[in-house]
Image 1 (cartoon, helix red, strand yellow):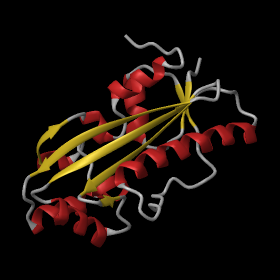
Image 2 (spheres, one colour):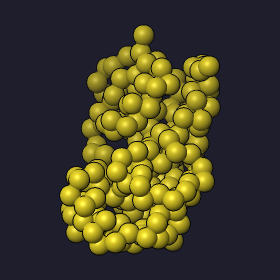
Image 3 (spheres, one colour):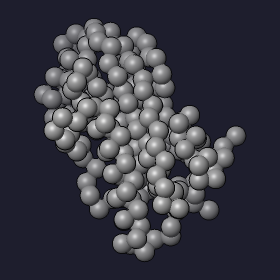
Image 4 (cartoon, one colour):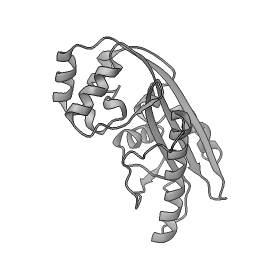
Amino acid sequence: MTAIYLASRSPRRRELLSHMRVPHDVLVLAATEDDEPRLPGESPADYVVRTAREKAQRGVVTIRKRGLAVRPVLAADTTVILGDDVLGKPADRDEAAAMLGRLSGTRHEVRTALALAALDGRLHEDVSITTVQFRPLSARDIARYCDSGEPYDKAGAYGIQGLAGIFVERIEGSYTGVMGLPLFETARLLNHVGITLP
């Protein structure tokens, strides 16, 4: 029996939930999942939490509108933060190359916020915070990575689980959080709705 809805089309999040052996269905939201703009004066930390929360809330509305079976809705948002800037998904090769150039040789932060809408109407939230150290990247490194096609559907223009893993000198935090679904925090949230994992 399906335990939850996942309000995300991310194949990485689906794969990670499957690794956790959590039965789930993808809930495609009526609203687009493209990067949402930050509100005026909104910090990157507040932005990522708000975005995940709004996805979970839209998931609940979508279930009602479509007359679907009522189940908890899990949503997530992953943001790459450099200074006070949020690096979302690049629109094209030039933007991807520019983001990678900015990340070259830096310590930056990856935050993945989780929101779980429970059947009783409560919203449970958590955040994974990871620091990622990139080695310096040459123009050739960036060009070859852009040629791979990997950067274009990923926050900050890279996926740690793919070729960009060779750019990462070290991380402090959650590897799966950088991928888009931190397993520890996800399991902790699922406990709130009676889903206990080994």
